[in-house]
Amino acid sequence: MSVRRLRRRLVSGTMTTLVGVLSFVAVLALLLILGHLVAKGASSLDWSFFTKNPVPAGESGGGVANAIVGTAIIVGLAALIGLPIGIGTGLYLAEYGSGRLGWTVRFVADVLNGTPSIVIGIFAWTWLVKPMGHFSALAGGVALAALMVPMLARTTEEMVRLVPHSLREAALALGYARWRTSLRIVARTALAGILTGCLVGIARVAGETAPLLFTALGNLNFSTHVLEPMQTLSLQIYVYATGPFDEWHRMAWAAALVLMGLVLILALAARWALRSRYGAAR
Amino acid sequence: MATLPMEQAAAPEPRWQVLRGTNVGDRVYRGVLTAQALSLPLLLLALVSELALNAWPAIRRFGVHFVWTSVWDPVAGVFGAAPMIFGTIASSLLALLLAVPLSLGVAIYLTEFAPKWLRQPVSFLVELLAAIPSVVYGLWGVFVLIPFLRTYVVPPLRATLGWTPFLSGVFYGNSLLAGSVILAIMIVPYIAAVSREVLLAVPVSQREAALGMGATRWEAVWTAVVPYGRAGLIGAVILGLGRALGETMAVTMLIGNRHDIGLSVLQPAYTMAAAIANEFSEATTDLYLSALFEVGLILFVITVAVNALARLMIWRVARGTAVGSRAL
Image (cartoon, rainbow over the protein chains, first blue to last red):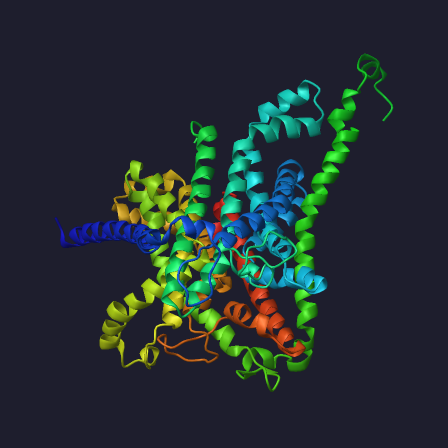
C-alpha cells in the first residue's frame, strides 16, 4: 500500500472518529446539565417546597408554590391567546398560502421566530404595562403568546401539508364545502401533528424568563390575579441564582429541576403524540 | 355566474359555487384565517414602530455617535453603546467558533457514519439541548461551568497562550469566555438540526459518485456532500449566530456585565440583551429609557437581518435546486 493511500485512509479514519467524539461531547453536555440538576435539586424537593411560599431572605424553609401556580396561569394565558392565532395562521399558510401574502406571512413568521425574546418583552411593556400603569400577569401571557404564534404557525403548516391530497379531493368530490373539508377532514387528520406543535410551543415558552422581566415582573406572595404582578419558576430561579445566599442557591436548583421536569414532560408528550400517529409513515 | 341551470336544478346547494370557492362558508372561513395570518405582519410592524418611536429621543440626541462611543453615564445623560455592541458580536462569534465544529461534527456523524439504531436517539438528545430554559443554562453556568473553567481550562490556557492580549488580566469567573461557552452549548442544537436536514437533502448519487471514483468515506463527505449543501450549512451557522446575538438570560448571568471594551476573553463584558435585562427597570430618566430602546432596536435590526439572510440561504437549498448551493 502506498504511503499516499495509507495517509488518506488514516485521515478518513481519524475524521470519522472525531465526528463521533464530537457527537458524544454534545450528548455529554446534556447529560451533565440534567445530572447536575438532579444531584443538586432533588434533595430539596419535599412537600413544603410545592405547598409553601418563599420565606424572607435568611430564613430557611419555604417553597415556590406561588411560582408553580404563576407559571401555570401565565403559560395558560399564553396558550389561550397564542394557540388559536398560531393554528389559524398555520391553516391559512397551508390552505391559501401560495400567493404573495402567504410568502410574506411565512417569511415574517421565520423572522419573528428569531427575534430576541427580550425585545418582545420590552414591546409588551410599551403596549400593555405602560398604558395600564402596572405590571401584570396578563402582559406576561401576551408576550409569551407573541413568541408562540410564529413557531406554531410554521409547525401547523408543515403538519397540515403532510395530509394526502387524495383525502381532500375525496371530500370535495362528495360535495363538501372547502371550509368543511379543511376543518373536518384535513385539520382533523393532522390533529396529532398540530397537537405536537402546541405542546412544543408551550414547552418553549414555559421556560422563558426575558419577556417576563418587565411584564409579569415576579411576586413574592401568592397571587392568582391576572392584572397583578405574578411569579413564575423561571423568574424565581433568576432571582435565587443571582442572589448571595446558599439557601437561595439550593432553592434555585430545586426550582430548576421542577421547571426542567415540566419542560421535558411536555417535550416527550409532543414526541409521543407525533409517533402514535405518524410512527408507521416515518 | 348564473349559468349551469341543470346543476342548479339538481342540487339545492349549487356545487359549482363550492368548486369556485364562492360559497358563503368558504368566504367566512378564508376571511377568518386571513385575519389571523395578518396578525403576524401587523405584530412585526407594531414592534418596529414602537421600538423606533421610543428610541427616537435617543436617536435624535446622539445620532450615529450612539453606536461608536463608549461612555454610558445615566447620571450625566450621556449614552454610547459601543461596548455592548462589541460584546454582543464578540461573544456570539466566539460561541460560533466553538459551536460550529461541534454541531457540524454532530450533523455529519448522524447523517453519514452513525449506525442506524443510534441516529434517532442521539439526534433527539442533541435537540433536547434546545429545550433547556435559558435561565437553567445560566444557573448551571454560574455554579458548574465557571468553577470548571477556573480549575481546568484557564490555567492551561494561560500557560500556553498567556502572552497574548486575549488572556490578560485576572479571571474572576464572570467573563466573555464563560458567556461564550454557555452560548456555544445553547446554539449547538439549532445548528446541528438544520445542518442535519441539509445533509439529508443531499442526493445519494453525490456520495456514490465520490465513492465510485475511489474516495475514502471521509473524502466523499468532505468533497462531495458538504460542498453540495454549502449554502444550507452556512445558513444553519448564520441561524445559530442569530440565536446567539439575542440570547439574554444565560449571558446576563455569566458575562459579567461590565460596560467596557477589552480584548481579553477572561475579562467581564456586556451585551445588548443583557443591558436591557439589567437596566430597563432601573431606567429613571426618559432619555435613559430611550437609550435602552435604541439598544433594543439595534439588536432587533441586527437579528432580523441575520435571520433573513439565514432563511433565504436555507430556503434555496430546501427547494432542492442545486443552483442555489452553487451560487455561493
